[in-house]
Amino acid sequence: CFSSLGNYPKKPMSSYLRFSTEQLPKFKAKHPDAKVSELIRKIAAMWRELPEAEKKVYEADFKAEWKVYKEAVSKYKEQLTPSQLMGLEKEARQKRLKKKAQIKRRELILLGKPKRPRSAYNIYVSESFQGAKDESPQGKLKLVNQAWKNLSHDEKQAYIQLAKDDRIRYDNEMKSWEEQMAEVGRSDLIRRSVKRPPGDISEN
Image 1 (spheres, rainbow, N blue to C red):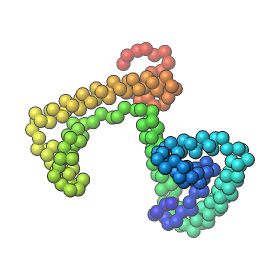
Image 2: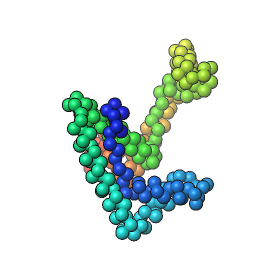
Image 3: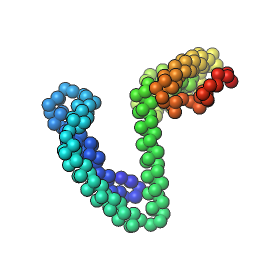
Image 4: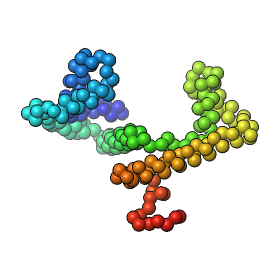
């Protein structure tokens, strides 16, 4: 729901999600030691093998609830002022963009995209954060930040060199990864700066 604009009607669950939600407790009871990811795979396989007649029951329920949902949305919007309606649309766009970004991140993790190179400061923080003598994360970060500022030039150079090494690691891993993405037809994931048009063998 959109917290800033009250109780926005909740979307109904899709046919599969409804089926999965019903089945998960049953599968957990049968396989208490199994991971949820394993159970979800079992449920997905069961859904694929479900007779069409049974699937249509779930689809019919979804269509009926979707109709009710659309009517509720229309009534909800009728009660809003023009400025509230604009706010609703803006928040909906932001939510869609956020969800799209989350899906993109998950996809890149599954595809094994190399981790971005760390800066000298970030490397120092990762090494020093746990040892900082403060109870709160904010306090730890403040102490580490102050310690970084107090490092001598030579001490910082060691971390700068580590950052350069990490950049080399990243460039090498990205080159290999992008070659793999090109082979599996995911050229959309290749950085624009390294894309080459078909037949172009020039080096720039």
